[in-house]
Amino acid sequence: GAGVSQSPRYKVAKRGQDVALRCDPISGHVSLFWYQQALGQGPEFLTYFQNEAQLDKSGLPSDRFFAERPEGSVSTLKIQRTQQEDSAVYLCASSRLAGLTDTQYFGPGTRLTVL
Amino acid sequence: AQTVTQSQPEMSVQEAETVTLSCTYDTSENNYYLFWYKQPPSRQMILVIRQEAYKQQNATENRFSVNFQKAAKSFSLKISDSQLGDTAMYFCAFMKHAAGGADGLTFGKGTHLIIQP
Image (cartoon, rainbow over all chains, first blue to last red; front, side, top):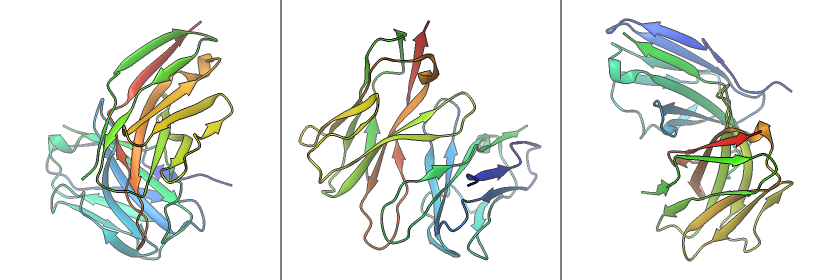
């Protein structure tokens, strides 16, 4: 079946603009994760959803970052008033199970550049 | 909090050689999982191999195997008969066992592996 997809693949924003990044997880996957990967670094955890519930948002760097998954499938990561330090690749991952540790499958990422 | 350390920023080997990538981690958890992910230039992260901490037997997936030393908190990846397609960034990752739900991965900074023809 189809893997995790993300859109757009590339986004250029001027400092201060708001952006919205979309993630389509694998169909039927209960868990969804967002990660931020700065250039030359490993991904860092941002937030986690189990169905539509956001169970962990401890990794969100500021209150400018907001994520939602209203129907338990597609998720959107929104960044308000973007800053240059927000430039990174944003990765989405999904896993099949809830309540258990399971393999996470990653999307191709959205590369955000803030000018 | 957990930390994952990959001390080799870059490695280069000849095709068909065997290469070992190092990873150490620090945690106070007893139940956890360790992973190696591969990220080719296209940037899609792909799971290579996974190890449950409670299992003493080292995981193996075809040409990929791990040397898991729990007491030493070491989790190295061995790639046998390396191929040009193995060229990628390799990330070691840690996940604690979360009884109430899944948990985010903690990644190392990665090792850039280059397979030379």
